[in-house]
Amino acid sequence: MSVQLPQFDPLLHQPLRTQIAAFLAARGEASFSELKQAIGATDGNLDSHMAKFIDVGYVKARKEPAATGRAQTVFSLTPVGRKALTAYIAQLHALMVLSDAPTPAAPAAPRRAKPA
Image (cartoon, rainbow, N blue to C red; front, side, top):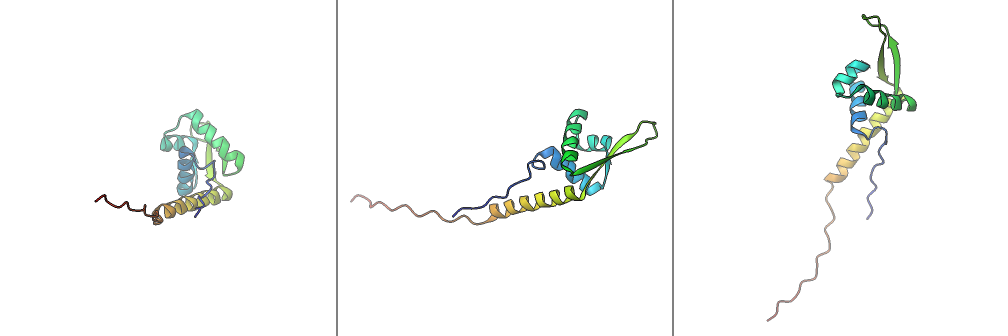
């Protein structure tokens, strides 16, 4: 019997991007510096991941004036991004259900007769 494994979204199936998406889903929105601090990423690493999210439409970015006079970028999940994260979580759940399923017993090996 063949078991169909879930097909994961390759963009979300990367630990740092999963954390970013989950953080944005919980917070609603976050600045670049807030994300950087929460996730523990470098500027370049976070920028690269956010660019990928924006390119596929999972995240939107907007500039917001800051008290320092320098605008900061604020990110939020789009409806498409939220739907993708929800689907990803469902796929993880499906995989967990498969891991909890009882495994079929292997056919017993024939017994050898003991020598007399």
